[in-house]
Image (tube, rainbow, N blue to C red; front, side, top):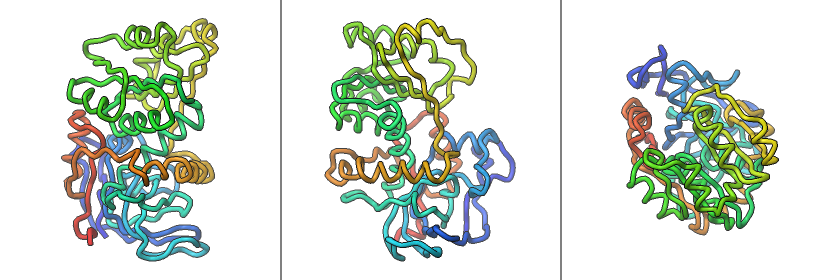
Length: 330
């Protein structure tokens, strides 16, 4: 088969479409013929040499995919060859085929195109596990989403609105904020021109955000804590703004607030299986009925992954950028 390889870490040009050995499903695994994958920030970090796959995972980038079941490993039940699926991966989505633990497999939701289903697994699992399973966002509460127009952001807006929460978002352009509003965001903050601490304070009558979903890390840590409501929860899922920062513990104590920080890729199989099961139970019905939809910016052929990475690095997208394997479309 062919896959996107990284012979040496570097810029987008480091991604090479090359012939590699076919993967073989083991016990409890399924072989998927990939129709599409999606670009995530973690893929860019891997390409740069900063985020290696966990032990035993595919060396190729790609944390989610959609496609068709091509073969079943021993001990697999509930699926058959030809089933249309999407999957959460520890790696390997940028390829013509990938092996997936059966617990990380999901059916393609009703009304969702097979290609666009590739935009769902990573973002849905990330949002559901952090905002709902860890931070326990409740109806009537306020969620602040940094990077509201990203793949994660567009999904977080929709899921929060579906459970009856109020949503504030930050983004860097009018166009991106307008897209967030279309998805249901209530409070729109241009981080280039406005102070999100002050804007959230004003929008909530001084109460603050009950939950914050943060992709920036160090750069926003102090301001995020100041933005939290009493008993607020800060969920950190990225470090685009750096890895080291100082924190005023007194502010955290006064607000009786909590901070969690997670990554999805390196979690044990048992945890990923539990998250995927929760997503299938709670989120898939929302997608089946059209209340929540994947947000896709554009599609490119898989062998143009370097161009896709450049688009995402320059934040020239709204929602997800997909990589398509044309040969596997039919």
